[in-house]
Structure formats: C-alpha cells, structure tokens
Amino acid sequence: MSDGVDWLERLVEIEPPQPSEVIQEYDKRFQQEPQIWSDPEHDEYVYRILEHFCADMGRPLAGELLDLGCGNGHTLRYLADSSKGALSLTGLDFSAQAIKIAKSQAPAAQLYCADFLTWDIGRRFDFIISLGVFEHFRNPRAALRKATSLLKEQGIFYLEVPNCLWHGWSGRREGFRRHRGGSDQLEWHLRRSSWGRLIADANLYVVAAIRGPTPWTEFTWLLSNSSWAEASQFPELDRFCQVQWRQARPRRIRHFRNIQKQRLKVVLQTVLGRLGLLGFARKFTQRI
Ligand SMILES: C[S@@+](CC[C@H](N)C(=O)[O-])C[C@H]1O[C@@H](n2cnc3c(N)ncnc32)[C@H](O)[C@@H]1O
Image 1 (tube, rainbow, N blue to C red):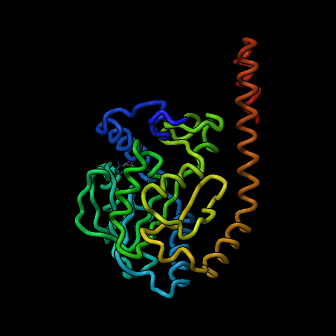
Image 2 (image 1 turned 90 degrees about the horizontal axis):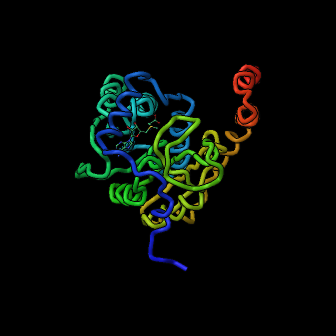
C-alpha cells in the first residue's frame, strides 16, 4: 500500500553535497582529463540516429539543437563538422572548466555555463540531445519536465543514460548513490522501466526506444513532447540500428568477458581477504 512517499524518493540513499561542491568535482575532472568522456564513434552514432530518423520523417536534419550537459563539447564539435551549418548548436554545462574546453573545441556553438534546472534561455529547440547527464540530477523528474518545456512542437529529444545497474557493483538494487568501481559520480541506478515511468511523468512520448551504441550499457530513446510521431514507421532508423547491433557483437563479447573477469577478481579478493590473505590475493589477481 502506498504511504504517500514518492517511489523515487524512497530510493535516495545519499543526499548530494551542495551544488557548488558537485560543480567543483566536475571542474576537477575536466582539469585533470580535458578529453574525458570523448568518443568520436559515439558522437557519430548520435548523428546517424538523428539523420536516419529525419530521413524517415521526410524532414532535414536542420534547426536548433541543444546538447544538454555538453561536457567538453566533443559531440558539438562532431555535429558542427557533420551538419555543415544545417544545425545551429547550443551547449549547456554547469562546469566552467568544461565550457572553457568546449569553447575551444566547438567555437561554432553558443555555450552557456549554468545549472540546467535554473537555466532560463527563453527559446526552444528542434532537437535536444543528452548523453550521460540525467542520471546525475537529484530530481530527474523535474529535469525531464524542464527538457519537455524546451522542445519546440514536434521537437525530438535524444536521451541516453547509462545502465548504471550494469556498470556498478551495487547489485540490481535501484537507488541514488555514488557509483563505486567506476566513474565515482553521484547518480541514479535505475532500471529501464523506472526511467520509462519518469519519461511518462514528464509528458514525453517514446518515439523510438533504440538500442544505443553499446546497448548492454546504455538506455537510449528518441522522445517527443507530443504523440505526433508515435505511430510512425522508421525503416531507415531500424535498418541502421540492426547493422550497429551486428557490428557491435565482437565488442560486446569482449566487454562481457572483461566484466566477468572484474567480478571474479572482486570475489577472489573478498574471499582471500577474509582469510587474511589480501596481499596474496592482490598479487594473484593481477594476472586476471
Ligand atoms: C558524465 S558527464 C557527460 C558529458 C557529455 N555529455 C559527454 O558525453 O561527454 C555529465 C555532465 O553533466 C554536467 N552536469 C551535471 N549536472 C548538471 C546540471 N545540473 N546542469 C548542467 N550540467 C550538469 C556535468 O558537468 C558533466 O559535464
């Protein structure tokens, strides 16, 4: 029976520090590793998805695009090069360090340093993309609603969040916590179905639930603020996704093997550590 407490609130395991401290964390990451999270193959994937979707809808990939949580601007740079001026690009991030790098990498984009939840841009977008950002909002529902309000009519929102339940070491338990054993960020670890609930709460419609560039580690959707495209067929998009899925097979197998090795390492270290043999365990598992 419901006790009136929101299901999402129940899952909060840790309250984030003050926003200024979270921003500092990101500034530090971008200072230490300016190209962190850059991945041209991934950028190409996003571009191709939008391109094939637009082809299916019989419209050009053109108009105003926002990269929400753009980080160092690698995706904006890719989009600027590929769209050849057809996309007018905007990037937003609350890390000043990230925006500084983005300014040098993607000079064609308009860049804003602000917290998305309080950002007042005063205009709307034909496309919003967001890669690995929404899982970090303490209130992802409010953030999704804000994204809905920034879409033009028939606008498209490419949303990608990592499958943190797969990445992390926290088992299959959903929650808002600091990710251990990975990037060490504060984030939501939610199932695809829970993200689906939040998407529906934000009055967003799933236009296409796609598999993502490395589908076992991400959840990816094309969303819209109205049901205009829901019933449409996407032959180009479907074909592209199928080819991607086939091509990703060797990487997928390698990835699964690595994960199994990491898990074996942790189990061995835990068991041998309990027997007082941690030194031996570390040496032994170095070869795994
Ligand atoms: C994991 S990084 C992903 C960056 C980029 N999308 C990429 O793929 O490289 C998350 C980004 O979200 C930004 N971010 C997190 N919370 C934010 C907020 N409330 N407002 C604006 N940016 C935020 C961080 O500064 C960081 O650059």
